[in-house]
Figure (tube, one colour):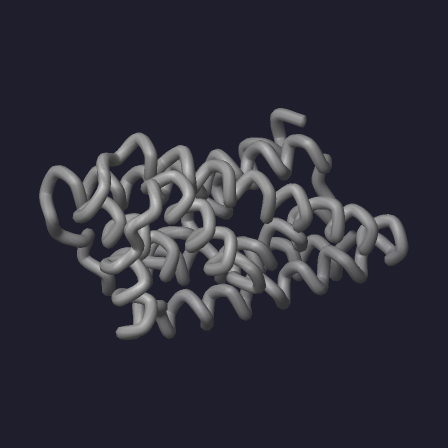
Length: 190
């Protein structure tokens, strides 16, 4: 479990840097107190990633290990391209954050739950769960995402500015390429 937790934490933390949901956390932090936002993000993330690891575990038990590892490597290269392209909030998403008068916990939970469905962090969690332990992957991916979003909340609440997006995007892209190439090499040599 410790290995799955650490791998999942690292991969999801990096994947979340510069992601749309991190931008949402930053936007929520300009309107609400940080703790309720973090609670809402944690609830939504725990639910989405629980579903993700169950899907990943089901897929993992049905396919040969080398095929899964190779597919995971290709997926991580895809995540690298997705990360390099970047995410941003459109006007509709900005308006939803700005006009929501529900409590911060409910607003953040609902917004993050919807934003994470089909997002690269959900797909990365599914991919990790095909080869890593289910509980460790769930816990690590949840903590990794919450930690990255907590960083955005801190930036939004304290500094009122974002981290330099191009540098974050390039760093995350390089990490995904490295993870992808290592997995592909492992599949081809294993």
